[in-house]
Each structure stands twice: as structure tokens, then as C-alpha cells.
Length: 545
Image (cartoon, rainbow, N blue to C red; front, top):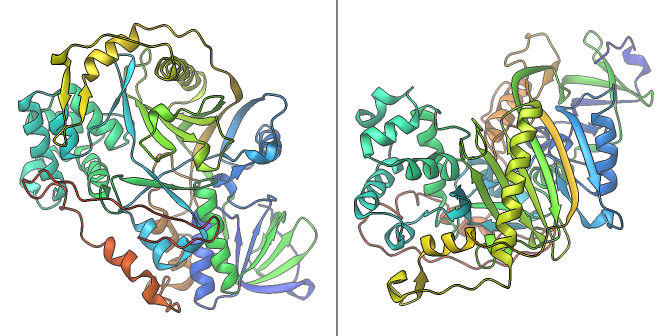
């Protein structure tokens, strides 16, 4: 950002805090400040909300691609390659630049409810997590019932899994079990302390923990695994949710709407080109000058770290309902380490159906990512794409038939028959479908992680925020927002400390989220807690639990 030499007398208007960029973290801070009476001016150089978190229609995506590949690119993205089939309606697609899911037990969801931003959003459940094993996708057993009815697990393995699941619920208190493995790979801990085999370790690490590698430290991995398990049965038989029409971008827009209600002023298409630390005057590309009394928070990239994630987006002419749980429109598919010709990091795939509001009926969007850079990262994504194509064509075919013996059928406690997944998987792998898959859009690009000054100089008015994290789940959003809020106000004691009217409306929401961590694994009964059905209003619906 250039240094401005404008004087305070030349200013068109004044504000307490100027926030540049409408990404998720910046939008949370804007709302928190606005509700405490701060005069906030929130601007963005883009004609849309969300910044690096945005979900774009196809016209916006074309313009974004040109910007990323231009010499003036100041985004965390680079090397974008886009193919779009003809005759697509640009307005019927919302392509997520940084797709994320929201676990039901998270501080971000608690903040969405507390701030009442959830009223502006529509959430859908996500309960299907799959692991790529032996050329097929195996659904992750995330509950006791899944484990007990599994035909691929031995009795000893089932007992070991249950023992670990009970342990991980309160792992922080059981330091004697894991302390010596604190900095050791989680795979070593699971094998030596709980006797788990490689397939179960892979599912716990990659599909439940959503970790890129089994080399992740035990302390970090246990927290991620617990996140999944304690999120089950909070609001239903699923651990995660996502917002309609885009993930992080929709949440950002919700917080912006809240900030606007509290008095913040918004301007899209306004580029910040300079700031004078001495006079506190910010200059926009239009020539306007803003007197900033307190701070500027900017999302413009400051520095890049070595980490890089390679992303791919594919829109396919197939609804992919075979991968979704009943009544759902999304799923997670994970390709573990060493399943794609030598990949040393997992490939994570978020599959979104038309029920997500991101594409028309009969289509689906595949979001693939790997924490690997350049050509090598793209190579693994294309291999994964091929595996996805083969799998969905096999599983969606209408021509598939095979014989089954009585001994290959198991029965659930409710009497429902279940066909052996091993037998079914072998038959599917040996089946060659006749049809081909049509791709309507393909996009590949890379994303750098950015770092911002943790503690800028005390006399500096300019603060930088960080780009979206690489994780598939929202992480550290609230902590980052509180950090920026504290740099502005000097405290976090009044962060969203607001008495909203009609607070009792959200009482059942808060109660439902309280202390449900151990309900699934703390007793020996095999009964699962019953789920709920939800009705949501389309844009401004209130979440009813």
C-alpha cells in the first residue's frame, strides 16, 4: 500500500476505524466494533462481499481469474486456469473460492448464534464422510451403531475403537496417556496405545480429523478428532453443516449485514491506494480522502509463508446423490496419503449438490484441494478427479446387478437388511460403466498462506489480517477476530457483549449446544440420540433447534 501525503483538511469524511476487505474475519470485527458504537467504514475493492472467501457467479469468476493472473494481483491466489462450457447461465452458479464446513461444536457457530447473524443464513447438514480405500469410497463409521454393524471390522478392532473414542472425549484431562507422545505422530500413538490398525488410523486422521498427514503431532490431532466426535448429535445425526449459496462468503455477508444494522457504512468497488500514518488520512482510488481516527484493518497481503494449497473446482453433469446421506446435499471424500501415485498429503474433496444452492438441479460441484504446490499438486488433483469420475459412474449406473448369498447379508437391530460392503465393493470395482461424465466447468488455482504482524508497533494505525486457512473446516476465525478487536480497543471483554431484543428466542438454541460432549460415548448403551428436522427461511431464516 502506498503512502499518502494528503492532509486532514482535504478529507471528504471521517471514521473511527476503516476496514479494507470484506473477508470473514474482517466482517466479524466490523460487526463487533459497530455494535459497541464505533464509527466503522467498511470497504472492498471488489464489487462483491467476501474477498478471498467469496462465492462467485460465472461472470465474476472470469473477472477474478483475469485479476489473479494479472501483474497487479494482490490476492493470496495465483496461477488460475479456467474452462467453462458454453450455454451455462452465469447466475445459477456460486463457485466458492475457499470452501469450508462448520462443525456443530465450534466457537464460530456459537458466535453466529450469539450475534444473531444465524438469522440471515440458511444452514444444511453434512453427515457423509468417505475414505478412498481399494478403489472405492468407504463411509466413515462415526457412531457406535456404525462401528457395531460394520462387517469389515473384527471384534477386537471394534473394542479398540470404542476405547479410543471414550478416551478422546476427555483427552485433555488424561495427560498420562498421551503426554509422552505429545510431539510424536498421531499414527504412532494410535497404534502403540490403542492397538489400532492402519485402515482405522487412516479414517481417524484423514476423514474424521480432516488432517493432511498421519505425521501430525498427537496433541494437535486429538483436538481435531474430538471436534468431529463431540459435534455428532448436537443438532442431529451429523457433525457438520454448511451455509447455502456459499460457505465463508455467506457468513461474511451475514456479519456485514449485522454491522450495517449497527451503523457501519459499506462501499464496494472502493480501492484503498494510500494511507498516511502521520495524518491518519486514507486515500481511495476514486480520489476520496478519509480521516481515520483510530485504526485501519487491511486484508491486503503482507507476506507469504512457504505453505501453499492447490485447488481444483469441477462442475459435473451428475447429481452425485449416491454419496449423500438421506435428505442431504453434500459429502466429504478424502484420498489418504499414498493412495494417488505417491501423494504425501491427503486430497480432500467437498462435494456439493444442487441442494446447496451452488449449482442447478442434476449437477454437482467437486471442490478438491491438497497441501502441495505447483505441478505436483495439480498432478495429484487430476488423479483424484479421475478416481472420482470412475466411482460416481459405477455407483450411479442403472445397469449394475450382482448375485448375493444369504451369508453376505447382515441385519441391523431394527431388522433392516444390509449387504456386505466388501462384496458390494468388489463387484463395483469390477464393473465398467458405459456412460461418460460431462464436465461443465474446471478451475485450478493455487493459494498462498499469508502472515500478518501479531503485534504491530504501538504507534502504528495500520493492522493486517490474514488470508483464509487451508483447513477444510473453519478454524481460528473467532480468535483472529478477537485479536484484531483487541488491537483496536485494547480489550476483548466487550466483544459482542450486546443485549439484543427478544433474547429468549434463542434460548433453545443455546441450551441445545450446552455440554453434549459425552452423550454419545460416555455410557455403554448403544442407543443414539434422536435427531431433529429443520425448516429454514431462504435468506433471513432463524435457525430453529
